[in-house]
Length: 77
Image (cartoon, rainbow, N blue to C red; front, side, top):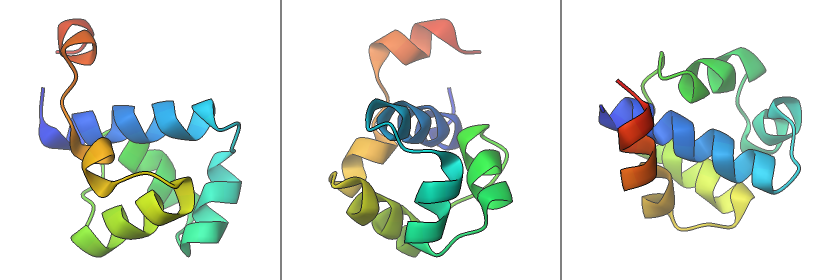
């Protein structure tokens, strides 16, 4: 699994776990909802600044958005 895919899976998992919509997270992070949707789907690249902004809004360490988890590696191509 690519880092881009892991980022998207982690971002979506954490966002949903906090009961936050894509629209809400995008607005708080200063991003377009379409960008956030693409990032969660593994279709968009994220800059370090974007990773940091999203992590700050979500209240997590940026590395939590980038980690590869064994459970997600087994389920994804």
